[in-house]
Length: 396
Image 1: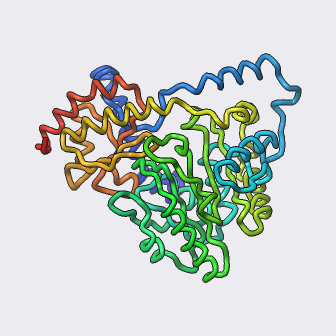
Image 2: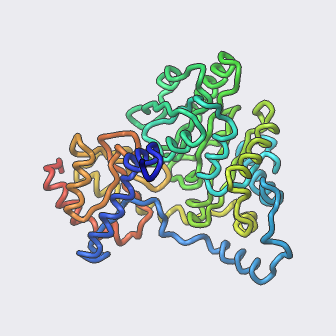
Image 3: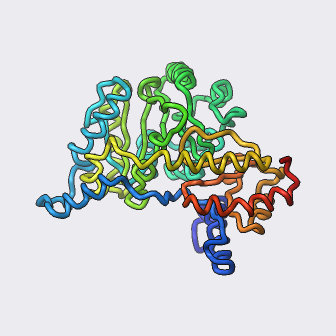
């Protein structure tokens, strides 16, 4: 008899690239010292939250509200939901109100709440490769089936390929812009084309197909404005967290927002609230809800990320690495110089460089670099990147 569920054991084996590379990094740091190991594996920002976060925290600590740590509505504090809705309404020009918002335990919690609310057993969810690896497991959590669709050469959604993947079991498509792992931002014309496709298929199959927009990087963009998904897609459900834009990944605070244009949007919100409770989240953290209420227009310093992006992108490009220049988030997704991206990652380890193979994101032949690390680490890594490029005979 197995100690754990067979399916979980299989999932652990197939989804452990980031964990494996982290463990390798830990081993190398013990041998060579932390300053001689260049770890680009984790999307764990070194940036501190905006100064206003500390101000709000002190304000609450010095002036505690009676009952502030008790249960509240499973949807969250209404004042927090209204603050979120106000900004979303401005960006989309839609009548989004507090009742369209459900506060959640980060975006991961939010995605599970959404999927639990909309999926029947065997329903399919389209994900666009490369994708955040946890999507597959979230879908499986709720008896759904993942259908992978490859993006184009610039990592943008291929509308025809998506259309070909649709069938009567299709219930949703997950999009992620700015994208992890590529940093690509989906333009408004692609969102509009996706909307037409989704509405057409919804009518054909006699039930709504939803576009779930996973947006933790929406405020981290450099060269292009991130279009409001609510502005272009009728059946949109927005899921996000403040892990990246406020540098609060450990606090697990996010929300789900339902487009008011969705038919029976109130019933969908009711389902979200029910699933938020019954999945065991119960409610988003009370203290964090109060803190982020007045931080909806705040973000970390985006220019710091731009500087790091340009520094790493320019240097690697000079060495001969090929990649799409990211327009947002804090990742690079270069082509692997070797057909086997896992073998490339192993060779990079010899130079004390830790990367994540593209296979971990459903796209072999590439590798991911997270540049949300200290700028000095990026600069100090250059000699190792040069040695790696020389070993692989990259074109200079």
